[in-house]
Length: 231
Image (cartoon, rainbow, N blue to C red; front, side, top):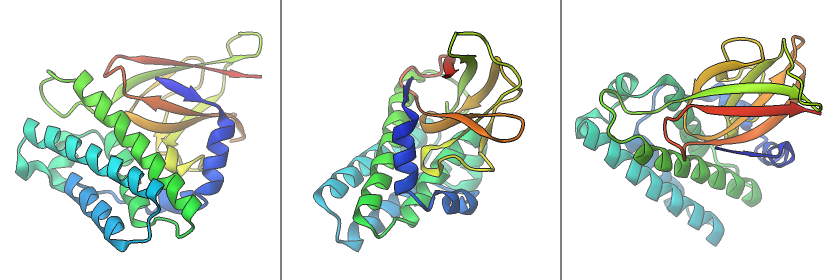
């Protein structure tokens, strides 16, 4: 697990000015093949820069790996929405749906489009890293990580009565987050999908006190602890 300074996510949020629209338009259903089709439409739309093309190639490669691992665990017929809803966690599905919506609504501005593609590429790379670390599990497709968040002040003292929220990084900070921790800090726990996320702390008045980019997946299903310090 890695965290990145909130300044970089603010830059990304500015680049992805449509993130609130994405969050509102997130589909309830998705498939691996549907994501692959979305990448094909982007590729054949033309006008991609070399950097955008490289990011798209990375997305395609990761999707191929993920779909193969999923269908190998179940079968080819399992890559349909109703079976994915059974085999994959809601958290993972919400994350993959974010990628699908982003691919279907790529910005026309080249800089914004590149930022979107790079973010999707990063998210899927983390999902690819997560799957091998979780092989050997029986039952459903391993798709969540238990996460605990501790919040402290600048002196290292625990803070209480604060709330932790998370979204796929593409969404940024929103009023209606997809992932809500189960109690006020500190500590607080929930299950999160592998991938590139943005997490933030807010008070009882919904004021955002701190936000961080969080990368999850490289350590498999091992429970993760995130320590967030508010200056």
